[in-house]
Length: 96
Length: 230
Image (cartoon, rainbow over all chains, first blue to last red; front, side, top):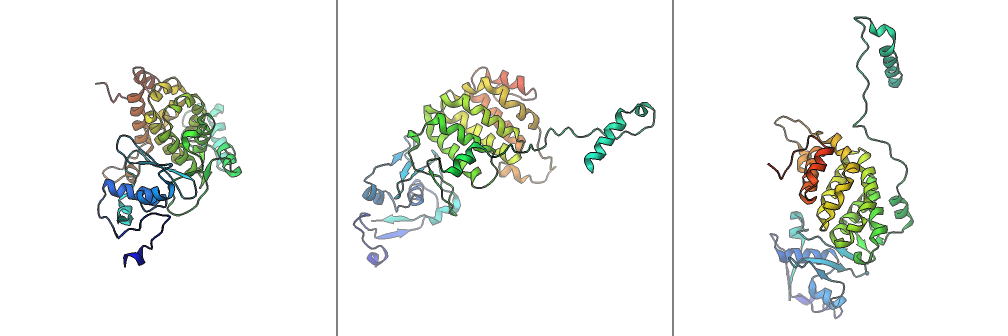
């Protein structure tokens, strides 16, 4: 079932086993929101595609600061929480 | 027609018959201190944007509240681009207003010590944006000013010599606040209340401007009360 939902792609790394929708905001949700805004599933996929290049984190809280999209453009993120309350349940948390 | 009426009223008030008692010369005409000023043609920002000179990807999707930069911000020439983005704060049309606002936000958030040397070049765009007296433009510019003073160390102090250029407009609008009695003023929630934003901005100036900040703000805006002293 999982393989039908998430077909294995060698380019984008290992395929996830399941996905859940968060109910409340956490740092994990913030992380997923930032990656998904840039067009990636999560850090695993980003590392598989971009090999970790172009990624930057804020030193004081570890939030994502900079990501490179698949088309080569850069997205920059704020120091503080960016994920609005209405977007929380639209984020996807993948389990491998 | 209205203008003609005003002219007549002025004529009457300066006519020698106006000195006679029981002559109604009407109220003086409005000076127009709060009136919105007409725009002075297309901004440099708009020209550069239309020509595609900015290193940003132009996207018009629904979720877009971000700019996709084609070049890393750290590698941008701040002396060239930051004043240009500030020039775009005057814009009221989509997409120019969005790209200018978001571009300034990104550059300030990630500029670090590259912002400080550019401060002198930002004063004229800030002043001209505030001088439009357009409530929307003023709100945006005030929020940007609040961001600017905390964007990097010593930026607040570097702005003190330029208070004379920036603060006169703030002095005019400082008391522009809605008196809704016990009703709800929704602009407070949306942070669109010019009077409140001006107070916040002045407090931010005072907090970040060092020892001389308060006395300089007080000199330009006599009704300002310190947020730190007393």
